[in-house]
Image 1: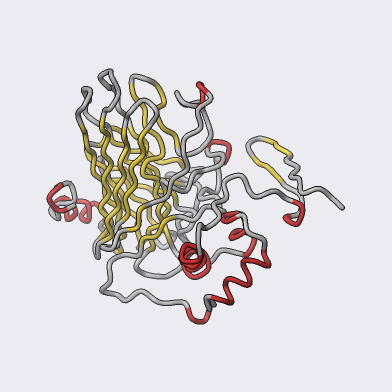
Image 2 (image 1 turned 90 degrees about the vertical axis):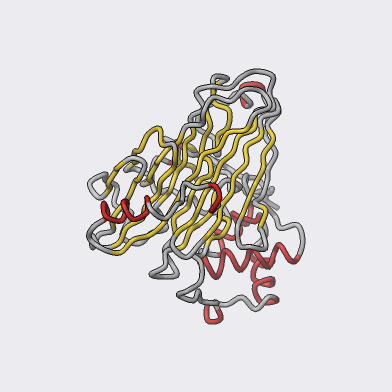
Length: 322
């Protein structure tokens, strides 16, 4: 009988594996802890992200027979998928993993972690979604302090320290939050709050280390692979007006918009493709906490610069409205 082993062939950031029947659990798989969690993630994957059976296996580490039995048990089918009402807040869900959130530049995001990522679904359809990394990376005067995938060494990987796997806290108000405490006492807190007009985002950093922190640059990534009509690998369809970054679809009538404040660098990576309005924390002495705030929304129309001006007036930068 063949061993349950996985064979990897690597070339320029890509990898291939032998048949799933002989594979170990996928490296970044998260097996649900109980039946309630299994039901939640199956509804998330099958109904919302429309995963294939293999993608569900990659996300959970479960065998296809187990997954099929669970889908049947919980009566999760394509023809009974619930639908969002037009006056509901935008649909936001934790990203399940199992499907890489990028089209290209995959060698720059090996084994992406799911606990930093949420999917924000577009209001004009049920199949389009943006995957937002909150955060993708945090730098400081100590070096690369956090990274949501494997690409370049962090201050922890250089020491052989593997950070704990975590999951979003799913709140009763429809929001999500996560607090990660790093080995040196730094705490990074993420918050995601969906609304009808857009999604409010917040990132806090508490300096529990013994040294002052400076040069606190943060990388936030809004990945467009799941957005039909937005996946052309170019910067020609993008508008960068600090702090706003926007991408239009092939028709030129629909837009994805994101912004963070205070914005350090607005830019776009055409290969992923993705949008960045990367913020920077103020310097942070020991024991202090600093905050940056973000936004993601969708727009239909021809005047995206006018939409930027409108967004300036709705108060998304105001902590009291978070």
